[in-house]
Image (cartoon, rainbow, N blue to C red; front, side):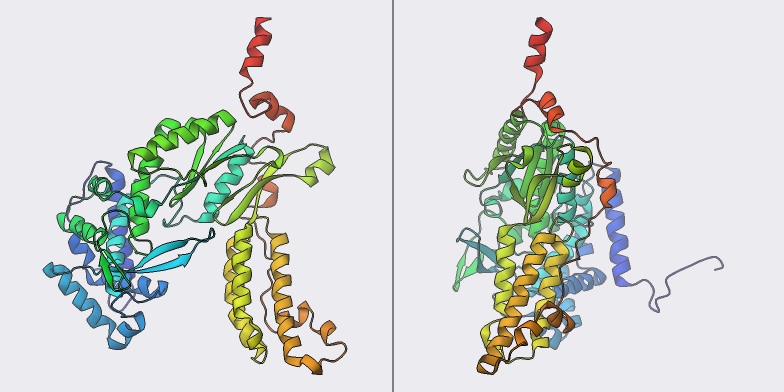
Length: 484
């Protein structure tokens, strides 16, 4: 018909477009009615376009094989279409049963090990398909204080929220850590939260099967009575649904105490006064107790940011207030701004990775091949941290990489080292070979000049007048003066 328009794709609308259209409809319906419960979702999960999009995302994320030893490469060799067709048949017939997750451990910073659960490739595809359908429904409810594992939200946005809040009387921080969060999630409470939005019994059964699939460790199968396995595709969404209770109760009843910024199970509360920070900790403990969770007594602490007294680590960055030297030189005012840089732990990890890629045994390898292995690590690490005050740390890492590469040159030459070789192997020599340079890549999310105009600048004297010397209310002294 005249006037009609459609996609130019020869087979009509692309599968990815169809999936996005489905997600938009689900999000709009959930946003329009806060009390609506969705009852016809299971048939969306086994739709061919949804399964194909789920496979693309699983393949993009890569990942190891589960306990069945079937890898992504194996699926591609045997045929992706037949693999997805078999999954669709099982889902439609109701015969799909998830396998136990493979238990693996990765080292933590404190020397302990963090357990990971690796589902099979088939289970990852089905979980991704369920996530594509369920995520828009719960995204309509999630609040702005949550940043982790959500579409169009990132760790940089969370850090920027703290930076801006620090200008507006953000002087104290509750640096919170939930003890064994992923292993302490109560299955029954989680399912009750899911059922507020989903009443499709087949979808609810599917989620229960994943929660109770069990763990395969050293060839022994163990039942799983609590928690969600870290490493599962659906686990981040389920963890956000569970902690949405914290976001909601805090926003409704405790927001005047401070600003909550949460990234998955890692969160902080930035407050104006010490008393507010203490009250915030008590409120958080009460809310978490309702969920069967508790704060870690050793890792949870209250931080005072006044005049850069203390710092705290969040999302791989160390955050501390520092005095602006430019404003001091221009106006002789002591103004402090929250700055962030890669934490010592982040520096240690990236140095260890660089050292792993530049062992002495590679001294006879083509240096361009070594640099080709280093560049993705440097680019990825630099892209994450470049939005902060990371210039000094970037220079340190550039120097470390340069010394590691020069050491390979020296090891290769050994007794044949000639005068002038060390001077010739300077930084520019390796950059000409293609080495990525971190120095000069720092870029703020917003223009530097506009940062000073986001909120009125408050000097230390006005801070004390408003909040007291120790961050407490200055109301008592004012009342005494009025009584006199």
